[in-house]
Image (cartoon, rainbow, N blue to C red; front, side, top):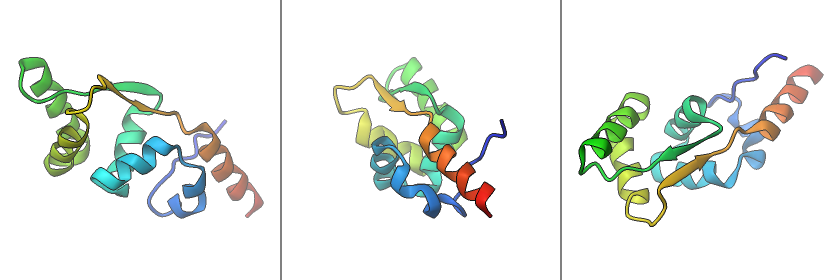
Amino acid sequence: MKDFKITKENLHLVIDYMPEAFHKLSVVIGEDMALKLFEKYRGINLPIGKNKTAAGRLLHQKLIEVIGENAANKFTFAFAMSSAKFFNIPRCIKDKQVLRDIQIKQ
């Protein structure tokens, strides 16, 4: 089955089906960066580092590589101070199915 990629061009078609985690992340780092993070890490629990220890700096550097320094700093500030150790990034199966169905109908 073809993997239907959710992009900023077609996001409006499936925005109502996106998981709560996407909307939460979009508020913090913006839709474009949230899409990049979801595309890279979908289906995993992304460790949240505080950028203070060697391991935390490594996690932060990996975020920078995907979403840039500004968004990585926002992510760290917003989520590292919570008690959560991970940020769950869902696979977005329903969203991709809806996108597939829309593209098939066209």
